[in-house]
Each structure stands twice: as C-alpha cells, then as structure tokens.
Length: 155
Image (cartoon, rainbow, N blue to C red; front, side, top):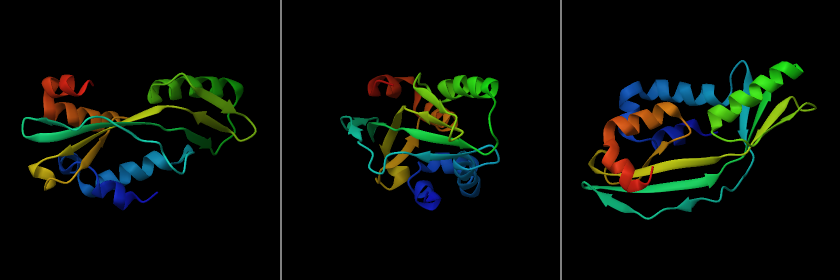
C-alpha cells in the first residue's frame, strides 16, 4: 500500500495529465473508500513478462499476472445488493470469477492484470508503467501511443 512508490513508477504523461496529488488521491480512493476496502490476496505475484519490443524509439514490455483481490464492504449487503455487486465487479474487473462470501461481507475476485512498461526519453530510459485495470490509464496510453503500437504489442 505504498502509494508514493506506485506514483513514482507511473508513466510521466499520466501524472502530468491529472497531477501527482490527484493520482495519489485516486489510488488511495481505489483501495479504501466509504463503500469498501480492497486488498490483494497474493504476497508474491507471479509476473509473466512479454518480449521487450523497440517501437518508434521507445521500449515496451507487456506484463501480465493472476491478481486475486478481496473487496470487503463496510455495510452488510443484502442478497439483492450482493448479486448486483457481483455483476458490477465482473464488469469492472473483466472476469467471470467473482465469489461473494456472506460471512465476511466480501467478494473474492480472480482476474488477470495487464501492465504495459514503457522506457523512453520522458522516463529517462527507466521503466514506467500503465496499469490496464484502470480505464483512465488505458485511455491515456491509447491517446499517447496509438493503434499501431497497440497492435504490435498485441493489445
């Protein structure tokens, strides 16, 4: 839960677009808010690294991992609310593997996360990342790198 570290590894254009303070707040809001608390379930995540590709003077690498998470809700969910949240979490996390655990008032979500690492002049040739679980980050990637790069990366 080191939000400063997450921010430091984020692609600079993303930070420039919404501001460092705003990105920190968005990350914090994503993990803990008035409705739920979100935690990853694996201490060590098994990353799978794609081939490093040099495209238009930049280096890219697509990284994926199984990334199970638990959403724990503060207020007790009714059967109907849990069914709706199950579908919402399936849509948000792009997975069918969502299980409600009534005793814990939480959802176990199994999903695959995709990161795109970029190394270029704006990152001082250090790897910085986009997290495609976040729609906003994916949109910033799309607006900065275009369809030909996405196609070359198999995205």
